[in-house]
Length: 437
View 1 (cartoon, rainbow, N blue to C red):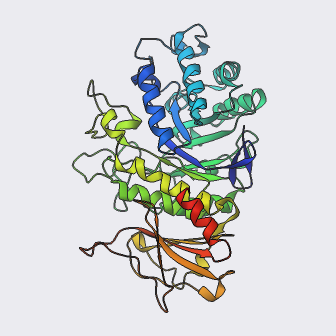
View 2: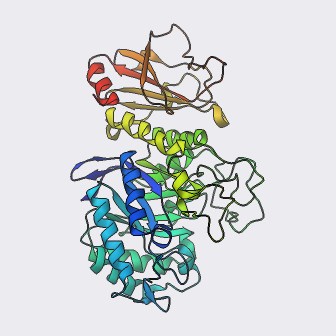
View 3: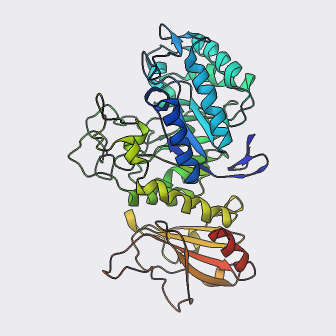
């Protein structure tokens, strides 16, 4: 059973790292056999959570044509439909693979247009609780790319119903460049916060598109997703995480395929920045996977790979390095420690994030520029190594007299690197944990 302890998740009483993958259209695009292939792929890569939607658009159906609702009416879920049997079998398969299913009851557009309203939300929530409320590997994500202010009574009704009928955790997936902390702090149904740092680069504050943020309270963070973590911690004591950063292989700004596409390198930056700020986990996404592009029909957001090719995208292999290092370092007992950087004024990509745990100190450098640390203020005597977010592994070196200089390859190209300073007293054990030996 998943629970919350301070700013982190527990599973059966042990620390649980929320490493999510984005699979919004799973039930409408994949056969059951393909679902099993996808789940096994993600489990073997170290993912722990799958985020998917139960009803994503009108006339939603499985590839076999089975529908979850009668006449698209949330007050009339079709309990006899084979669709729900498929959902249950998928949750059971995920449980076998030690995966948690983060289920969106429906996409947020239904609440915004009133198709899901307080009355139907209570009926639908009771149905979901009866059907899926006993599964310990299920948590709920309300919302779905929507502001909480668009339908607060509906979200309260659904959240309160699920809280009353189940023991499962509940979060809220918000609109781009927003956080659930903007609307739901103190709500009895909410267990953790989620923000969506989104798909725009620093130049794309306003695009004249449907997903512009025109509300004054929605501050512009640019690409600096760690700022959402800091802000959420100022607002509330709940865990928080980035539930939708820029997806791998999606255009900057989402809408224009002539723009550059986000790569695994930027995805790593979002992951490490947010987690070393103190987030309880991170959700990876790939453009082709989140919509399970099969090459048939209309692909969205400039998608240019098939989903079964995108299964092997480099970013999906790299997320385990984040989880492995943080778990080995007992990250749930750690905190952001920017004060240990001699110069914390870096802007944009030059900003380093620093995280202190009982086992040592981590500093993430995206650009590979030299940086200094206040070693005299460390509460332990350190050993030093570099850790590659792209490849994993530890590369020890002697502590420098001056600045720390992340290594470059033979062509002098800088890669993102993590400085790992371990407490000498526990270094051997921590190194074994990091390497899994």
